Length: 293
Ligand SMILES: [Zn+2]
Image (cartoon, rainbow, N blue to C red; front, side, top):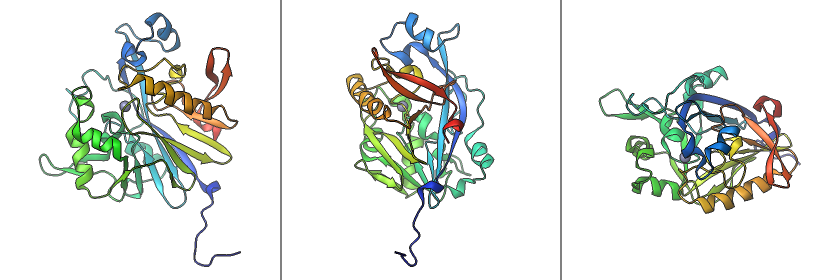
């Protein structure tokens, strides 16, 4: 049957692009919480200052109707002092990375924020022309954030204070195109997400159906391939026991055939599939993102 005038979206037309915005460094101990350095440093080597190198990736999802950007990196509003412990280096830049794939900032229809920590949403809002003014970097985009995370970030707390600079958060609302998400759903055809609360309340983990495959953008739930063992978690997590349960659920889902995890922060591994071993769920194959497309 033909539906006159209704465009039936073919999910097979979906295009995905992974952009590494920049690399940065973070304290290795903080990245692996209670795990002794003798163990984590074998899985994810540190430098002489105990720092580990992390990537900072965004995923672009073109559905044929929507051009969705998942997370926007640190952005360019902050000064050197803000980054003095981050040792930014490499990467292709967000706007430059978009251009490389033929997209301009004004083409983005939706920015999907996994959460509002500064390294995930800072690039959504840029500085305006006048002093202390701000502007949306993606002027035609709806900003999606979970309602729980929005309210958490606005209220802020002493533990995550540095992660929520107000200039990242409030201008997003002023721009007038904020969609506060209350429950898990298929937001776009083939694009759904899980809502988690261990890392920070209301963290959203995209799950994308792409050409017979399922791609889980693991975000800060499983930041690197070394974080797959259930208790290998970041000290940054607000509630570790919740992270463990939520990771277990997502990893169990990832055991299904043709399921892949994409890492936002692993400097060496973009993507993997997983397998069940006697020790629990572990990496099966480390893969470049291009190999699963
Ligand atoms: Zn985070």
